[in-house]
Image (cartoon, rainbow, N blue to C red; front, side, top):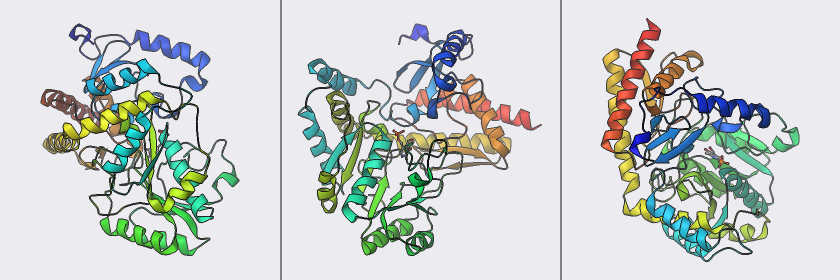
Length: 417
Ligand SMILES: Cc1ncc(COP(=O)(O)O)c(C=O)c1O
């Protein structure tokens, strides 16, 4: 991407995007589907993207933005990180999808086992849903039990057992799913007591339900879940798909001092290349070897080479510390802007994965006005989903994002008067 392509945001009509949307409506159900559908977003959001470099992205019409969504999590080192792209290309040149996995699969499994404290083994797949579903399958195979406990409102993927949308889901798909409240150990104990005994309790590193203020984990809750699972012989499954390698170079609960039995990973582990992983401890190794899970592309070597390079670069570049620092600066800047205008906001979550809501904001109207104005001014963030900061963001890009959020607060202030 050359600098010549950079245009002030909004300087170009969205003609390419509009034409692609029109064509998509004819050949893609609903015009688009899933979490990347721009339909529920303000008009300012392009549907189709063209390119990314570091912390900057361009839509198909050539408008440039500072990226505060990072492809909804996969980009952690910045777009097109040179070492990651080189490793993936070198492997792809040999071969990617073959009759057997490449040697890099063993290299990656060894690296993950060295990097993540609770991991004694690894299984690879493609998407986060593959990983969470495989964790659940291993827990059921190990315990001979059916029931799984999840936190109300938590997202663990798009399979029938966990998708948030009911269309096409049967009662049978959900009959073995029970619920507890995040950070409320008594509710998990009550869900267990209601029986039958669960095969697993699934939990995310912090509460990051879309559209709601985020809640960091209470360490006592994490420890309590660990003790509960150990006492009843259930697996503690940590869904690290969204947070993994953004908050800690290891499992996200290592700083809390709590190790799960199984953990699900995807998004950031290969800096945008398609890969997921299930990591587990020795107690679950036998069941993990007994279940049958696979996929035509689960053994592809290029994404595994990208993951090895990603993990090495995360360490070498102190990426977790960088994201935390940048996130703190962004938070300080945004909170100062809100305070200067007397706008009451909640800025929640870890610094590297923040989320902004407006006090008393019904139906996310102010959040949408804020996001739309941020987009017009060159910062790509989201009104109903947590944001992601990559380690590639420079001070200049952070400053540019803050110029956009300043304009966005002004737009919210005007809408209120
Ligand atoms: C916590 C969590 N678990 C699981 C998933 C599912 O991952 P995927 O969309 O790759 O299937 C996601 C995706 O956003 C997620 O955030």
